[in-house]
Amino acid sequence: MFNIVQKRRWFFSLSALVILPGLAVMIYSTLSTGAPFRLSIDFLGGSIYELKFEEGGATEDGIRRVFNDVGDDNVIIQQIGAPAEFRWSVRGAFHDVRVTEDILARLSGMAPVNRDSFRVETVSATIGQEVTRSALAAVAVGALVITGFIVIAFRQVPNAARYGVCAIAAMIHDILVVMGVMSLFGLLLGWEIDALFLTAVLTVVGFSVQDSIVVFDRIRENIPKHLGEPYETIVNRSIWETIHRSLATQLNAFFIMIAILLFGGETVKQFIAILFIGLLSGTYSSIFTAVPLLVAWEKGQLPLIGRGARAHLGEADDVDPS
Image (cartoon, rainbow, N blue to C red):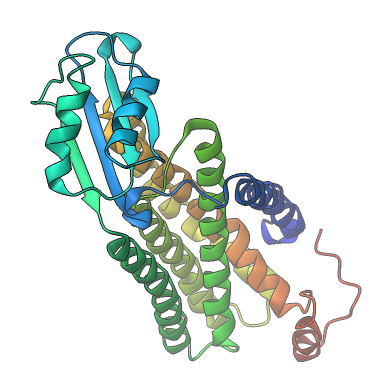
């Protein structure tokens, strides 16, 4: 049986190779654009117009002049789809609804606008701020509830709080992976963080913690069954006893998401792509991050907090986990 936890340094290094470049991308994005991500109007507030012209003639400069004439000097204009579709997306500051008709009239001077496919979405800056605060509060409260639940559920296991902390560490691992990917795609593809992104992140958090708890629960069951065995052996056995369940559950979800990415609409592809990456990271972290981190803590190999654990286990300082 392959000893997964014995190779934990390799898995920690692999996680670092993914997370550190993601952090570097977020720093670069902050320095170059003023924010680690491209933010949608869900956070910034403003209006987004989706336009489809009946024929050619509309240009980016022409659309920009129209919005400048109504008082919006800082708009972001993107062409959607193939050039022959004549579709444009325009994001700008908050506009009064009465201005919309003026904008449409001015745009129709360049080319007829298809009003059946015209869409405008407006969000105030106050709502954007509330969305941001609610998202941060949801993640923080979720982390506290998860830790408390694990401490209570694992109260008969020595150092029960460590299981909760390791589950949260795996959760943070997955959040950082998703954030790094989103920052990169924001620079390369123009992806923006919106309410659906928060939904994807919270879904990833739930799946990640659930997978970690499944393995931790099997460890809790196996400890009294295999008294006298090294802790590392018990943990490795528990991983292999639960890994098939985790992989089978996630593979079903992956197949569905791949089908949506290939055949679904454009409006959900960004959400599904982020969800896919997050669940892939969650499957990895629950097995190769949370559990090996727990073993490293129990064996006293974590910086700053390792000495107490090592004394508790009565192990030598020169243990080589690789």
